[in-house]
Length: 320
Image (cartoon, rainbow, N blue to C red; front, top):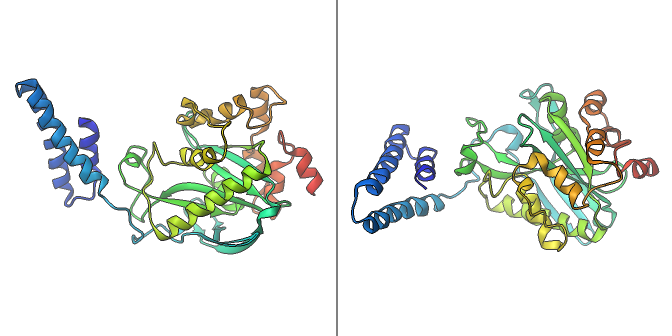
C-alpha cells in the first residue's frame, strides 16, 4: 500500500515535478515512520489507513480527458451507427506506413451487415517478453471483410508507453478500429514482432453479441473518456469483459489471462480454438509474421496470412 501510494503520487499530474517527488517521498517515509514508531500500534494503523484512504480517494477522483495533444495515430476516435442489420463504422484506421514512426494517417468509413458476421480471430503479438503480448480481436464478415479492434493506450505527443505507468492513470483508453493491413502489419512488418493468429470456435449468435458489445464501448468512449489500466483494463482483460456476459462456458479463469503470453494455451485448454493438432504444432502453424512480411500492403493481406492456418484453411479456400 505504501509503494502503490508513493507511485500514484509520483506519476500524477501534480506540478511541478519536484513537488510530486517531495509529496511521494513524504508519503512513503511518513507512512513507514508512523507504522514503526507510533504507539499504540492500533493508533498507528488508523493514522496510516486514514492517510492512505485520502491518497486513494484523490487518485480515484482524477478524471480522464478527451482534450490532449494526441499522437496522430490515436487522435481520431472511431464510432458506429446501427440501422437494423447494417452497422456503419466511421474512422477505420488504415495508415500508410513507411516505418514505425513515419506514416500518413488515413481513415475510411465502411458499412457491414451484421447477418454476414462469420468469424472472430485473435492475434497475439509478442513485442519483447515471451510472457506478455498484445492481443487484437478481428471480426470477419465473409470474403476479405475483416475489421480488427485493438484496445490500446491513447498517448499524447510527449508520452511513451511504460508498463509501470500503465497502472497509474497515465493513459486514456482507445479502441483502435482498424484495417488489418494497418494494426497487424504495423507489428509484424515494422516493429518486427512475433505474431500468431487463432480462430475462435464459437456460434454465430455469440459473435454478434460480442461485436455489438464492442460497438457499445466504442461509442461510449467516443463520448466519455476512460482510463487504461495495465492490470484491470488492458488489451486482454477487456476482451474477456466483452465475452463473459454472453457465455457461461468460456470464462477463462486462469493466471494465463494476466500473463497473456500463455493466452493461446489457455484457449486451447478450454476448447475455444481448434484442437486437431497437439498444442506445440498448433502454435507453430499459427505463426503469421513471415507471411505478413512477405505479403506487404496488398488487398489480399488478410486472406494470405490466413491461408493454411489451423481451423480456418477450408473456410478461406471456400470463400475464395
